[in-house]
Image 1: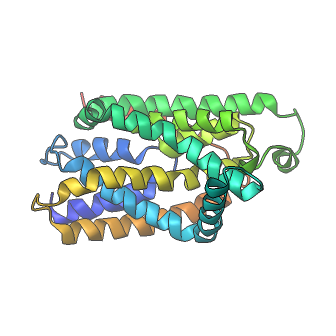
Image 2 (image 1 turned 135 degrees about the vertical axis):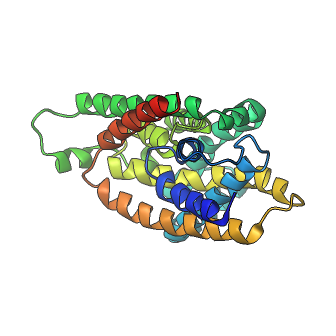
Length: 283
């Protein structure tokens, strides 16, 4: 990749990772649409994308630094004691329970999943599926809401992230495993799972953003070391990761405000339209 392509992908990944539209799907589809000549099947491509995700995770870690300080201390207390006693400890253990399924699936199916990164058509098809998933989650959510009631009042009736059951957290974690497919949005599937589990929209987004950090860190430990000794252009790679971090921070600040009253529907329609257009152009 050229320097311009590297930086463009960093900006694209950071801007699209937290929106429920699949940054991985865009990273597979867009280079093919632009007729870039590098091979997405190159063994360095997935580790490079993972490095960009670490930029995103660092932005989320900074944004939620106070939450992570509290959660980390609560996890240690609960793990040492062998018992959950307060809301912070419960939140910490819920995050653990929701992280394990995706980590296990990614480890077991690593090679088949990586093969999909060389298929922009598959990514476009999964992006369409992602859109229908978002629309379906909102449709089911609307059915559970009271007809004619004030939206803000109804949101207050739903749960905070710390009130999830452990069974629901595992289900959200299993949904997160779908995001290992390029085109399926990690934030989209976890927010959809959170909504179906009864979380408020804003709390579903917060739980999704918190859940992103450990799974991205685990992927980084697995993938990024593969760049060592591969003559990777570390200067441009790190600059792209920095761009991804900046874009992700701004995206997260926007989405936190958006989900106070917004829904997933616009992103669902965008995913369907973008995936369909990509399939036509990639024929």
